[in-house]
Image 1 (cartoon, one colour):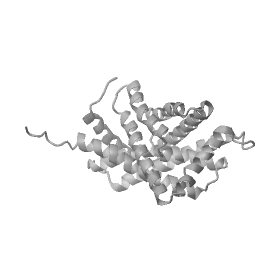
Image 2 (spheres, helix red, strand yellow; image 1 turned 120 degrees about the horizontal axis):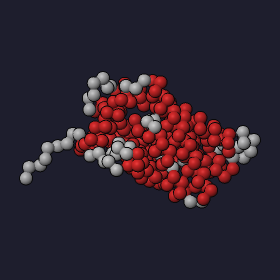
Image 3 (cartoon, helix red, strand yellow; image 1 turned 60 degrees about the vertical axis):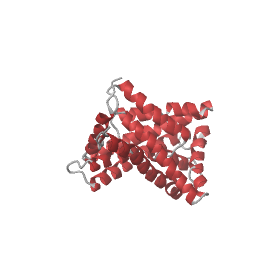
Image 4 (cartoon, helix red, strand yellow; image 1 turned 90 degrees about the vertical axis):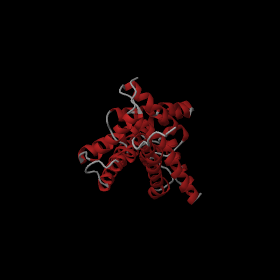
Length: 269
């Protein structure tokens, strides 16, 4: 596969962040909606495979298909813009402001949530035959995940909240590596391979992804999960999103930008 040197693809990261900040509201929302919907469907697919085979690793191996599809189509996840947009601000690109970065994050959050929620209702309808039957093994699994990853954290108080935050950090460290992976090659095969590896890792390790959770938890609520909307936001979505921002930016965006763009002069012998 054709490989770009780090200095080249990090410049592409900054360019991408700048482009997303200046993108029209309509296009930002459309791309975010489709990203949330595709990732939600991939999550439903991976859980279905894991439940039917009894082997979670198989679901984790197959889950990245959704991530690869959405990025090849040029759609945007919140976890990706968390990393890319601040780099354009740090690089002092003309016209890039803090307000512009926050605007992009807000629009992408809304689009991702709308897309994931749409698929959540669609899959719940399918699992329950129009809400006329029990959701079955896959639906029950989704509902149980929602309970375990809200109330399961809540019982540990602050330590539980910090655990979600750290899982969110670790998640977007890997997911943002997948975002960068789409830029390190100029071939479809190279992009897919580079994206696949870190996404498989995050999913199998059970790290917390804010957009995946936009599907899992509303789905769990719709299909009878024993937790509330406030449980979902306080004990998952909020700490997860903050962790995704900190982890992706600190471990991937800033490290790559600092060492490959703000490179120090070579040390004298």
